[in-house]
Length: 345
Ligand code: TRP
Image (cartoon, rainbow, N blue to C red; front, side, top):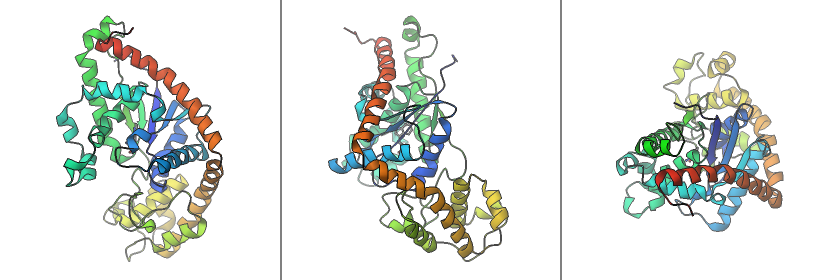
């Protein structure tokens, strides 16, 4: 395997309000990675429209996710922050990858099955092809590392399969065009730490989600202190005090979730959290969790609200990021055209 330049790519969909699951599962990890890698953080507006989005609302949420990136501490100068639709190479490469990926591979995607439900005949073709676009996002930059939540693991494996098949199918042409043995790196998922999966506050077996009808199921990044306190107070728990070891959390999804959230926000392990709170009643733990959440999320939410006011600034960040992203992706796309056999005139 040749050595590829280490590069991080990830994306967040601009759909609905950002919540604690997006923040801990993705954005916090993005922030940490900027110290070590060249990173591209994308607002994936083209993924968003695989299900219906109100156009005015899509613009608002695209700017909101951008503001959340910046408010959380991602430096837009050091990294590339942009929205997907502004770099046409994503769609262009996705088409080529549509022709590499096999129907059978996509048929196995559990997220599609869940989202399509019983109404398969009536979902968009885009929803089915979504993982190919995601592979294109990553491979357009020949990214090597992709921080994602647990739920995206299967899509990452598919991206690796697509990269591998492209490398194999076009091996001869890749060599003939002077790119050596392989063109695309096989991107590695980075899934680690507590809270790779933040669950609903009302049901510890369901993911925290912006589409849940109850706002009490989630903590939004823009919730104020009183709302956060109220949501944690009402959060579902079981009747027992917190255990002293992580093993005992396994059969207690709500307890596991709240401990995981505390751990992620405090930068501790779940075991350390239980050292402090093992034996405590939930009422006491929830108070501590509220205090910690307000302390950590309050400034991010406030900064986000401030940045969102300045659409011109946000758009300038996206414009600069898109230009820098395009410079990389267009090089990849030129090479892909040569490899596939498209005549470039
Ligand atoms: N599918 C991802 C999600 O819903 C978002 C995404 C799109 C993404 N393209 C990506 C994540 C590329 C990582 C890399 O969370």
